[in-house]
Image 1 (tube, rainbow, N blue to C red):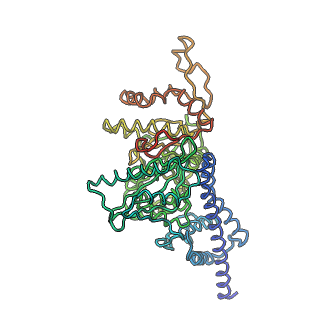
Image 2: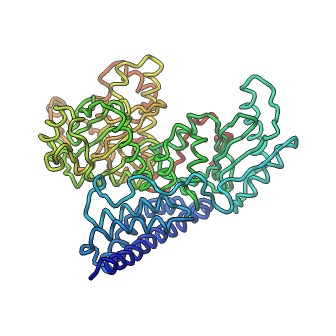
Length: 587
């Protein structure tokens, strides 16, 4: 066979393979959008259980389509027998197919996933994947555009807001939309008065809102910004149901901290229909400028692309830093070995090969717990994790003590390849200050706030049917916005699987003096009274916790929460303070 013939066959194979991969992505995104578009109906019909089920299903869609596409390629093209030159052309052909595509960046990530699976190469040394994006997404937009603009001009704002809400086409009636819009206007005027100058509309005065509603759990959010001259004011308008199954505007949020809470990595992903996700991400970066593209794609439910972007950001940081990875500060855990790069705001967690007593879990069990958290509603109180396989690190950037620790505690996932260290399995989480360390140095006000947040974290997790299991302060972190978030998942259980009991009274003096329980304890029995022993040893902590959250040390509190969940009740957990709500008694 001459070279010309072989080149022609390779080119033909490459185009066909590229077309199948794009077919797989297009099918994935079509199904992804179909499920997402159902969010409005589920929200308006108050189908809370269906909302959670849809969120879990959507997370699994991506891997299903990757596996399906890889299997099709293996069956149709015997990909294990193809010459390397074919794969060099596949990427070239794929790029040509992405011209005028609406989601090229996500399609490139899908290509990487399929090729990595087929070629059995690791992400970091595969020469045939998209290490950098090749298609610019800067000026891609949908038709109609991603956001709408409204121009109040000199007219009353009320008719403009009526048009704005009418364009969202909510089918469920509002309790009193006129009343709520007046409250929105009043809150906006208060916000505008904070400048200390009378508000004066400039010629470009307008309201811009993203075209699709952001749905999550029991809430729907309208996301937008007010533009006046050179000033931009981001906002979010949460909409929810009242007890009469009507809609109400719960508030309007301007505070940048609360906007960041809404888009927190500790919350479930939004259901929001986006034909051009890049356009939404570009708009959202003006709403929450502190959030990276990786985080925003993830919050749109495109967590696989968010994960790819994060890895690119990590590699970029690595190239522009010189500090060493080292063992993370804090109390060492029995399950995870945790290390960090001081200049990078994340930690790397590796499961130990041998998990000692009193822990009763193995590697598979730990991975299952982390997957449970990924699929569950995190209510702003459980950190999202990025899970990677075969991550390469430069060996000269590892502190000797860390290398020794990895070899000793996790040898099955530690591999040295020349000047690289490869970690076979690792979780990456945003770095937080461990609560136990935070309390040691906090001033009186911050100390009290942190313990209030700790108690609220426990209560909101309980409302979401999550019992943390290990409630020690070292397993909770304080974020940059002073939120307390749980991040140690090896002992979590569903609330409905726990049996909350009161400690029985001793039958006699011998029982009372015994170092062992005189009563039977089942595998899922929990005794909240006992927590005072290891949580309230510090007198200052004890006084503050018993003032702020005395109920968490009683079995009755936990049992009542369990009964509410078993009765089908879905608790309201707001990502903003109660005091800014318009209708505290609604819903």
